[in-house]
Image (tube, rainbow, N blue to C red; front, side, top):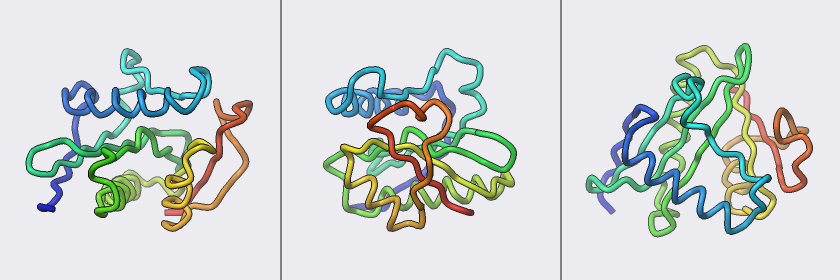
Length: 152
């Protein structure tokens, strides 16, 4: 596999939209609609989210984002790698870049929510220093949600 190129993009980027649609379709197959927490790209708040795309040979193969949660806390969101490109170290490259960006913005904690039907995601987060925490925010009443955090 060729080198992966990571770039920060605006929320309106066409390649981001393609990957987000694929992520949403993937999650919609596993969970009821009220248990899939999507980003509202029509909200002005989307402009406070930092989005990163991963490219392999100019093909968009992965994405991730960090969104402000509160003082010193950011949330990892919209984290996805195309199935054909998984297990090649792309996810950790995206995560490392987002953690660097979070530290540069003075965030001390990164939280995230994932679903209980995604053991690969859960294992990835645990392997990379996230520990399970109580559900927070909009995920409190979601039976399939599992939440994690990592000190940066």
